[in-house]
Amino acid sequence: MSKPVPYARTIVTQDGVPIDAAHLSGDADLCVVLAHGFAQSWQIPMVWRIATWLNEFGGVVTFDFRGHGRSGGVSTVGDKEINDADVAVGYARELGYRRVVTLGFSMGGSIVLRHAGLIGGVDAVVAISSPGQWYYRGTWPMRLVHLAVGNRPGRLFTRTVLKTRVVNDKWDPEPVPPADAAARISPTPLLVVHGDRDAYFPVDHAQRIYAAAREPKELWIVPGFGHAERGAGPALIKRVGSWARRAVGLDTRGAADQAGDKSQASGPISASPNAIA
Image 1 (spheres, rainbow, N blue to C red):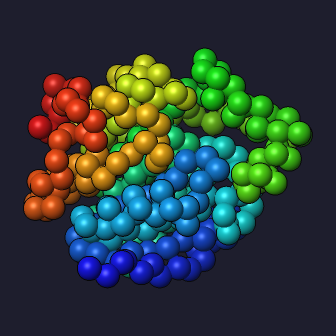
Image 2 (cartoon, rainbow, N blue to C red):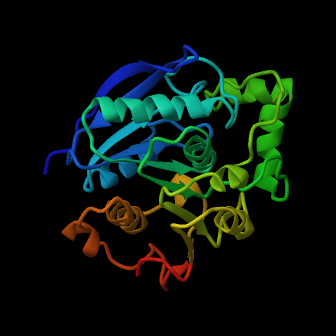
């Protein structure tokens, strides 16, 4: 089987930032807009693998947030990036896809929540390993992240080593937090996915998002799953792809039905009572 070949192009946000995007063509009924985590890029192998797994369920548009990869601008770590998500959704619509689902990891998860709640225009939303609140420093990885973005030496390290350009200014005003944005998503289906071994954000972040959100919503706490792209295996991603098709009223693909267990770890997903089994 040949490897999927992306069509790459530059799309421009409403505030004038050039965004590097790639499109994997697929079933015209559905496109998944894939939003990466902080200091990632669609060209990083683990992100690209996820895009190819999702391509079994429809088309995929993946892109680099501002300040990341070949995109312009500087990262605002979750604030103005909703404009990046919005132009990617618009690109998917321009390509002719009838339904568009946004799927984000970590920072990308917070952004797709904020995009759906504040802008809208999507048919379903998936937030994986998303924070539920801002300024969380309760784990050592998040304390390191704050050092990397909160002062000049940290931003220099982030730019030179992580190849991610971060804005120098603090938020003003503070953007709507992810859980608060989730409360504004309706009637769009929402899936919140979190690992019980997430070293960045404990499961109460996912629970906070889920509690704030309106129906229809689902919460999957995945045994053995760590954080974001690095911890996500094909079984979990294909199960999410299957959920996305069902959430927008499409039939489940056979490949998803054969994806294995409910997670890449042993044991079932711990889910909300209305979860799809």
